[in-house]
Amino acid sequence: MSATITPCPFCGGSELVSGVTLTYCGDGEGGGKRYSQPSCKSCGAVGPHAYFDGDEIDEDDAERIAIDAWNNRSAAAIGRSKEE
Image (cartoon, rainbow, N blue to C red; front, side, top):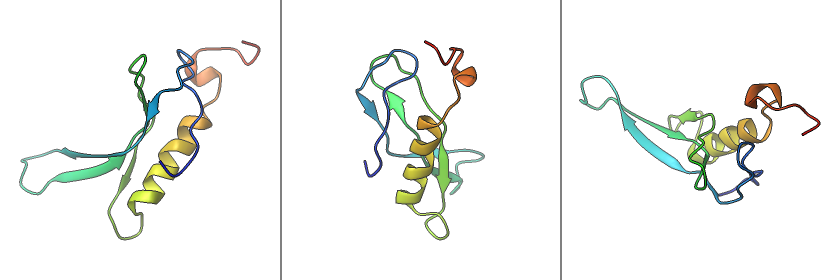
């Protein structure tokens, strides 16, 4: 993992994983899309994902974008107050 990821906002777990996933959509005829998405091994929470195409956005960029989105979610977005 190239970027630092913060603990899970739901369970506080620090065993997180972020990496590249290949998923297929449509008819399966070359319709695969690759993306990076953080997830928590403790509670199973998944974060935002970032697709990449290998040209304009590469694998490292997608991972950084997804981790930045995980790290910067607002307290309201996860159902907690900032005081908690």
